[in-house]
Image (tube, rainbow, N blue to C red; front, side):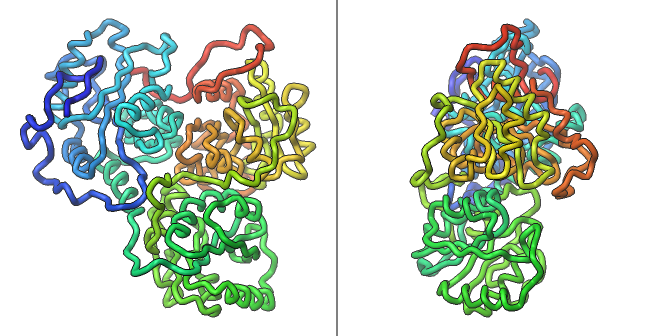
Length: 580
């Protein structure tokens, strides 16, 4: 096997002709980080060059100036030993500026491989910011090219970089991003990053840990009836979908216990054989008082399910223990859940997950601890059943439109109406068809937002109807709310107007192309507030409609009708960072 040829590659050398110390560090055993059968979370790692792999020497064309980052060789060897493929994705505007030649750059890359070991692909953008290319980060072109060269997809890639441009490129391609800040990384880039690691070895450790967390524990036999539990809202139910599919792959029958707010999403999930709806007062955000008679009825209802075991899925701030007690009273023999609190004999499998893990992976890790894994060929992404959706409303004019969803059941996560209206006008003026969606009770809001520019679907799009609309959409502009996860389940790119009351790395769009907008360092950060604690909703109200237009273009969505004005302006890629 040869190092791939290309503009940024060092001279080709056979892998079997390299010295042993070039193939693997002597301190890393090949099997230590390998993951046995289970879902494919990642199979490739993409790495920025300057500031991530090697010290950032501006416009370096001299191999003698190459200095690896501390611990880089050992960390990369761990990835190689784990069977992960590696690629470098790097902006090199020094080529466009004439500050070094292609031959000099190749010599630098050969020196990097001499010090850090071989890479499976080198992807280089030789352009400058003003060239308008599709490959210069924060554009996602390099990520797409690297994934293709490595025989995978962006969703199965992690990009490790040191500035905001790296993270924007990763998210816009649908890859995972891990930021390793350096002294030149801006504070706002750190705040906006989906995941942050203190150094490259720590980033690699997190990648390997997350892969290993989905490796299922041994099970003696296939399960019979399993009760899976996910209360709370539609979005919570949707992000638990991959884990429920994992349980379904190892069980004869799956019954889902959900709350009233998750009813519509529960009905869309594949892998579920029966539904039980019951409000849980220790989970619901606006609960009724605890009623002893209601609790007795719930316990009796759980007993009629006849479950051999139960897997209780919760969000990171919720406790599974009240329900575990009722399940014990209902005669369920085996119960698994994530719990930081001591469970006594309430749980057979007490699992723990570090903070910051995406909610779908958090649930999948619990399923794996209980002995369940997705079957071969089932990606860990969100899914809904394609059958049974209603037809899309008339008047949309065929596929390719952009959907703007301004509402949310949680006030802090909703786009301010006046901003949403300006976004609709900006998009339509730039030749995009726009549909404005909203559920029952939101007709007044959507009429205000759509104005005379967008197609108003307010009051006509419950969750299943919204799924039908999104099936033919090119992108969704939305806050951190259930419809964002519905779009993810349909592989629709998302412009995420994300209020930072909860961590983006846990609740942002998962494994689909996305652009994050909003003030990630706003005072409401990590408060979990349901009503905005800061007057004026500054985390979202400061978004400019032009930034949304830039984000839609960054996601590769073309306008498809005649423009309403001639001065729509050039594309300005979203995301920050230095200009290298």
